[in-house]
Length: 414
Image (cartoon, rainbow, N blue to C red; front, top):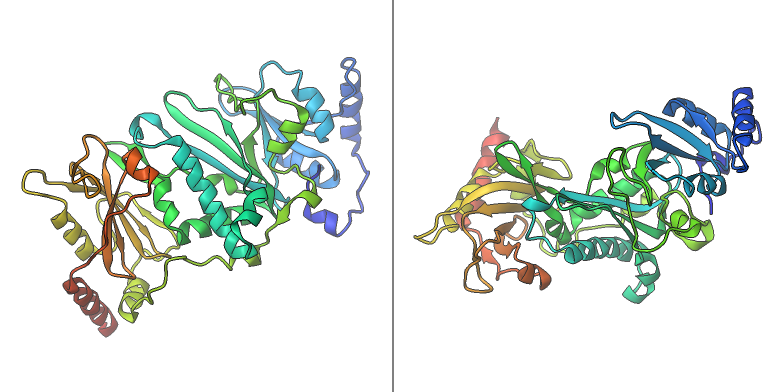
């Protein structure tokens, strides 16, 4: 197994060259005991990256030295790293996903357990698999059964009673670098209904925020990604896979370790094939113009306040979340600008159309589709989520469309 750095396509005049300082480190390591594993140590990431660029075939790892975040960096082959790693009792290691090095598709999922007791772990993981399947189906143009080999994934768990924490690695899906892997995921989140199933609650001061269970920050350049068997320094929650760790298993979970003949490579151009699956209705020119004038024109906009870019819609939703006995309110709202959806997280009002009554503890969400001018209810109850229940869609009032038209006319006249 190996990585494919950019330089491998063009050759490297420094191949085989080891700087004098590194030769000295090698001699020291070779005399530290019976192990002949070669490993170069660096105090900073920049020094390690510079050396890694000159030494193709060696991979970069980091290790926590204390709880303050201090790390040192190790450069070694996969075989030599395994010889070092397997003998460590306390493991606090990370794989450095270098810029412009090919990598597998990977996810980092996390949320606070106490705030999300309604979430079923199996359904969340299933939603991730469905999301990836949607993307592959559009890019590869293959039948479902032909995609099965690529949908196999490894789920590494380091959850506790307080925090849900998992890494997911798809060993057969590879991208030119992790930036493009992140773009693949972000594009899917913009285009898929499944995104609403990946939202979790996060405490923030005096209110709850609705955020993605997927940590999108892990697709930054030269990212340190914790590896199988390791925990953060000072913690006893190593990433586990439910079976004894071997070198083969470790390599399969490493994001940059793969054999090029065993994977499917997805490049950046192919991501452009991914389109919203539910855009059968053409968006009216009124709504298109209205969106162009809003400040919230990002591909994915998460609003942690109680209002959206469409106050008229907010006001209407507030009018339908009450029944005379219970008056609900908008906890917060998330706007997906690519698919033109508003996801309202509702508090106090829990009426579910499936059971014909209020849930005792599980909250509901109201989803508004601006392209079809309709709305429907979903909820966070495990049974409702298991069947992906949604209430029959209802039309938004015609007055809302007129309000959009009026707002657009006023803006255009300025």
